[in-house]
Length: 334
Image 1 (cartoon, rainbow, N blue to C red):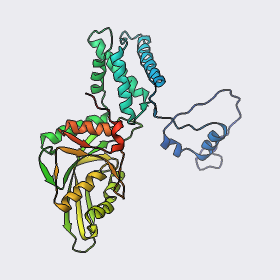
Image 2 (tube, one colour):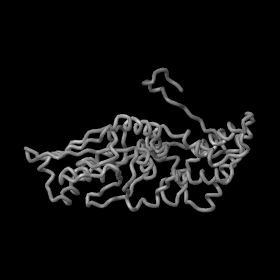
Image 3 (cartoon, rainbow, N blue to C red):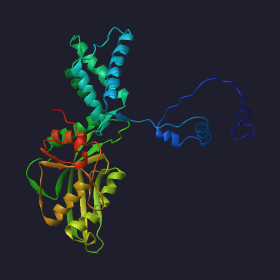
């Protein structure tokens, strides 16, 4: 590099051709590619390949055997580390729990997750639990225990929020109320980086006449942009179902004690709460619901349905309404 000042005309990098014989494999996140220098990316596309890596694979017998082989490889890797703490091999019940967890984390029917680093961590923790018991083999009980220990940060936050709400009676799971619906959402809904973490989403609605004949929708709560859009998308549905012009009313929507909620699956909950307030119809509080709502009133499938149902169970809810298209995506432990 010549030139002492960064603004000097001589401040440039001089390169020389160097012979090489290798293949460069670079991995990164999608947002990093978007900020890559165009000249560098042009050369990658001109002389190589860009590959978007899958986060799931088909749930077939062949791929299941690959996951079983992966479990064995993780156990052998721990043995070869020579740390003095090798983990025991897994029996059939332990392998079955790992496979079911792979299905659960995929979040889609007929899929297995490819987030193998997280599954590897689950394998090692389960093996450590078996070692603590001086067990000669790792069983399904150890894997279930490892799953409780290895909860992602988002799930730990969600569980504490549920506990906090139960302590202060912020969750209502009995009786009937007008304008109040127990919805379900996900916390930190980045399926590529972490497991879905379900959270209860109580929604309360109040409808008042608008004096200026220019009704507005007021929503409170720490919502993401996608969740905010679901608030504005329900106006057409409300008018279609109630026959009332929402511009004649001010609609107040409160997301009770909710922070960091992501996704648009609250739209069916919002619409139900508003219609309940419009028509003075009480809603069963021992019921929770989730689903995305189109402007035509159609209920669309959503992600993280299993995690949402688990959050409802932890909150004492006995019935959950989900989109019909998500029925086969539900994987609940007995």
